[in-house]
Amino acid sequence: MNSAAHHSTRTSGSAAATTSNPFTERYGRRLPRGFADEAAGMSWKTMVDTFAPSTDRFHLADFSRRPLGRGITAYEAILATRTPQDEPGNFTAHRLTTRSCGDLTAMSDMLGSVGAPAEIEKFHQYEGTAFDGTESWCTILRATCGRRSTWALGFGRDSTEASIAALLSTATRLHLR
Image (cartoon, rainbow, N blue to C red; front, top):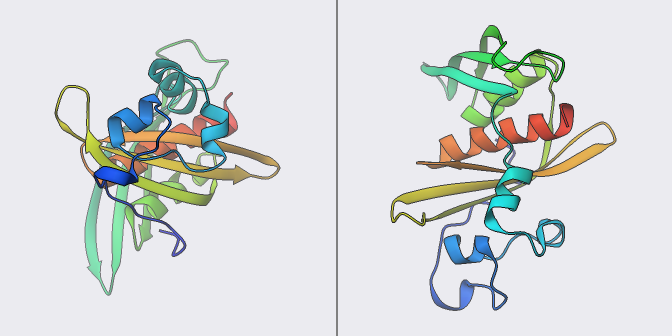
């Protein structure tokens, strides 16, 4: 993962923004500058539909890792892809492998190998409680590919799952929207 990555965990009290929005209500944190402007006035559903689009374009069917030593891990994944021209439900499965020092870097490499590269510029991660009371993580990415740039969201039960989900959302927003 990029060494400039920013990792935050939820805090209580004054860390919450004074302006209420669905993200602040859920995670007790302000949205990053720039992203807050793009998401201003959105309901939770609209924000999620916009910045965490369905995984119907990129679907991670399997993701495994095997430590190789010296901080390097071998990764294998089955990533199903569907272009906008493909019929719904018609995916192409790709068995991908790479070696990397982290899950997010590995997934970024794999997306690049299927023609969906993304350069992560900003990384924010929050731990919170979902509306149903369960533990939840959210990753917010700002990424680019050439002249295109986007914000994206990803959610998961742990930080890794949320990061990979955010990267899949990023790929969808940069390459298929």
